[in-house]
Length: 307
Length: 307
Image (cartoon, rainbow over all chains, first blue to last red):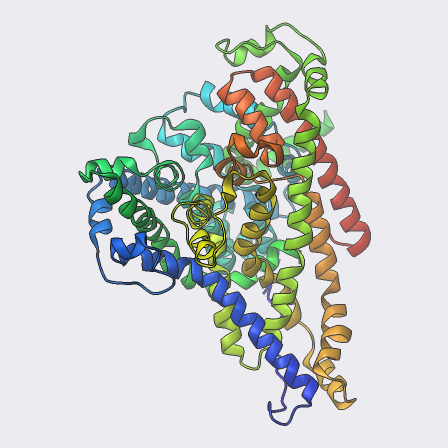
């Protein structure tokens, strides 16, 4: 429906039959792409290697790319730390319920805005789009959220970010591209708008919804900002707050609970503990994103180029 | 009378759409438009603790806070830092996805290109906390890998994260590392939209592959490039608060402190709500001018705009 047919052109000449100039270009391009892959992967590979390497080798700076020795003690230390599991649980609560609410509200907004005969369509489109141009900013928003009593409430992670206007616009454009006779026929048979949204619009924009769901889920999973502003209680804080404490501020809390004493042992383990935390925190993202990959292009295209 | 009747008819015809949109409208009113009303406090001497109602009872002070901000030594530094961080991100970060997309499209193996894409867009989905956490630890003067390498070659460890002359470089490079793969998706799609017969025609005429890039691919995707450039310009001053906040420390305020972090410190940390919202209002207003003009430009240049 929205997708242009993708043509792929690859040079039909074999590498050997090419001119020297083309050969050089081929090699430069290959090197460029390989370089891009290496600099993308290296940090992650290094982090994983350090996290499972022997502590002494890490402290001596012997781990460069591949693990040296094998020791899972940092994993044991981190996984025994209660706050990790509390924040993991919180993050999953915020991600699951937050994403669900995001997608439902986005569809509820996108469908009326996509219906051409809706008499408030233009006015409401402006009402929504204006918030992309101008916002009250941090302080007034903070005032509103706290005045609603959302400080130290789980809802503070969901309600203030219920809808991303940009995602709703993508969703609206996709719904606009659904052939209108489908709606007309359904309407003649007596279907109301709720029925048409659920049974016509939503099923037909599944690829777009998949991408939007991914964007929302990643945003909820990675949300640090709202947690920092509105969640003071450690019991409610998500993984990102925990990560910030451990990665950027200090890892001493984990070391203490694990009963590590002495500066040498602490120095050995600090880096490993931090990298274990990175591994544990990024694993879910690495597991999920490749599955949505096939939808990514069409979803992104729609967002940037209308129609 | 006649008009009222007509509106009544429309409301009853579109009642399902109205019901559907009502919760969405409530979200926008509470979390987007109410904070705009809250900006009033930028013109008042608003005291913490008077709640949202205090907005209408606090004494009016006119432009006092704006004068205080522009009279302070921080104003110029904050505006300069905000602008330069985005400007360098644009100059450095904008061309890389285009070059990468062209390279991907010119690879001899389509499946290798797909793999390269899937790998390079992964960092986009990693949280800012993790990216800054990795950066902080890689660059740590005591046990970071970068300084380990520097010392191995006889150099002196550099304290990157607390050195003002490194802040912008680190911000821009890490930002580009995180987004180049994802941002290239749209360009790859634009290149795939080029009709293969155009390449064939050039090949028959004896054009080299380099000439195809210069005279076919780049002109064909220039529309996409310009549209995205204009859109990026519109968000030029939208420096990510989260990343700066996680990266900076008082030692690098000279280059790292931006308007949004200053607003945060003044408002949330020091409770100067009125002053902070005045500065925030200035920031929102400048942002508004940028987005509106970029959208206007996009409409003029390409005949399409985002909304």
